[in-house]
Image (cartoon, rainbow, N blue to C red; front, side, top):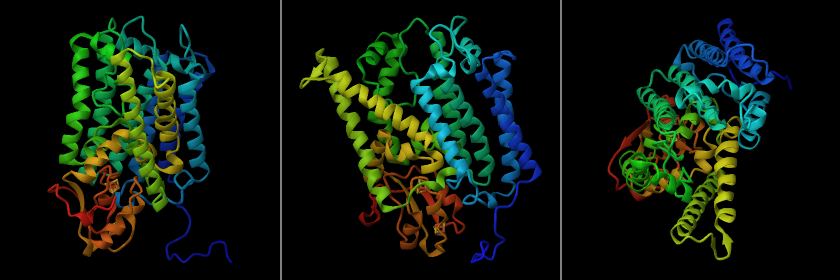
Length: 452
Ligand code: SF4
Ligand code: SF4
């Protein structure tokens, strides 16, 4: 058989890149290359200039490429299954391996990134001036400060790319702007500024939106003690944190579905929606994946509830063991390693180019599982369906990052009511027939609509 044979009447193959697209890619890659030269240890530019020029080049190149590639929003997904980066080809695997490697170095070998006991070198050195800006002249960057800075920069730059790509859709513009501002303000600027103003206080998490059980150490003894020692600011965070999971989360999920958090506020969701947007179609739609997903995500929720109960028991009774088991070594430490580091970091982001953009949100996040229970059983949120208009093209299912077979609902004409839906709205955005609509209707949904 001729190797070019195809049943398609469209021209075969992937169109080459235009000179403009090449210019954008070369500019962005030169920014990455400049950033990587810091690993040589030769400091040939002042760190603040080095970091600024690198990030500016990456931003200009990315926006330039996006402006040309998405000139017509109707063509935004052209070539998705033909590019080696986005079809689990060689570049996709290479990106996955590099991302995974970065997380392994970040968590367990920060010294390879230049983090030292007394002073930073190489790559880490680039972030010292920014750390001093926030925390005073004696400060230097930790690996978590470096990670937070890069994380925020990636959401900002690739968030602008997303806004260009989906600029014809109001919902996408609003929710993406919200997630960018939330990361920038709630997760980065406010905590860093507050840390700088309260250097004499012991550390406690100042990310206003990182509620338990996503913030799995919120109820650890040291964290509770540090918040109580943190004066009125610490007490505010203690009360806010408890209200966050006990009142705010159920209430907002009742009115808006879990999208208020997963797609508008959350940093993990923010990264998935911006950096992971090119890989959203790679999520498995198989029934077996759905079964694994339900067992895993509810298993992680049960795991953190158990760990937290044991930790609180130890905190209030003053004992270090329960049924002869050491609370730290048997409960806290394994959760931090398996779920906090391996799952949410290494697998959750490293596997974007292979398993899709929401691996963590779909299979592991205990807060998503908690909100999913409300969304499924008591929430006004649903995706309503005008089934008569559906032409069964499958765009909605293809681009659902949570692996939901939206088309099957459209074909049956039943509302989509699923615990796992993060309300990203992409299914509705890519539907050529306007079949799908994200709505907040009455909470007493018909039983037959509740499938997952
Ligand atoms: S069903 Fe639609 S809104 Fe829900 S996660 Fe999938 S694409 Fe996003
Ligand atoms: S994208 Fe729209 S028309 Fe296509 S299968 Fe989904 S609901 Fe039907």
